[in-house]
Length: 324
Image (cartoon, rainbow, N blue to C red; front, side, top):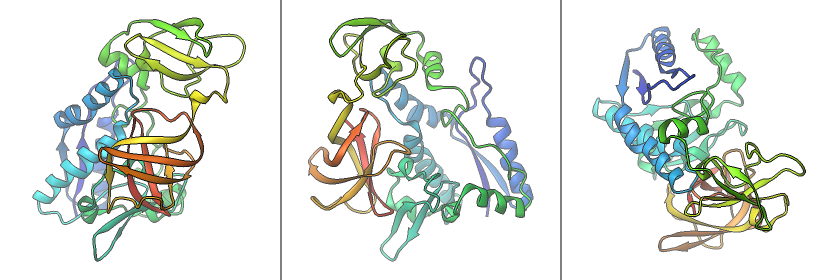
């Protein structure tokens, strides 16, 4: 057994220090506590190319991409796995709240026992071959307190370490601050209400996402919700009507679909999650050559282009795709 720390990001941002040094020291201390060898894998260049640039390109197109999902697909369960196997490893073990069930035919990804901490939404693009070589030990723990209790029992220094927050690779910095740092100030534009009336000015359309209520800078009266944006016109559209049809959808189209074990069966009953922590909604799937259409059993609010929708059959993750 060997402990590994992946160095994916080390850049400090104005007002925020990247926590990688502290995280590296903590990982090394855990390896010492367990009496196992420890290595550092430096993937910073690849991470910038495969994850950060992917995220920035998406925002520039007016989408809301998810870097955590791309990190799992490209770094943790591709690059890291490849390097680990090349060094003689048979399996990798990660701290994801999810369960890998190994079968005679291959491997399946299932929800964690702790539904509140479940991270399978971020793992749906992992391949079955990668899962064959993967373990996710804490996925069977009933809650985070049980994980901490086991870490304390083993005498690990990180037993009471606080959970990480913010962007996966930056820490506590928010997405708006990160985009400003990477892309610079954006061109202001017009905010239009549901009647087409200009009611204010935005700071840059890339900063706004469907369903957003906070940070619009529009005071007085009823709260506004973002219903869409036009990147070419540099306009952001909002509504005060929570029942506005622009906010709700009973179907969605997916592209860049990925199925872990096999493609879903048309008209079979599944459930889908349209964002992390969103409620599961019953649905059926209609396959297409370039993606899939999901028919929802009930209307869902704020389905956002660029985000992922993940399909489940019971606790098993079938796969998913990027919302168009």
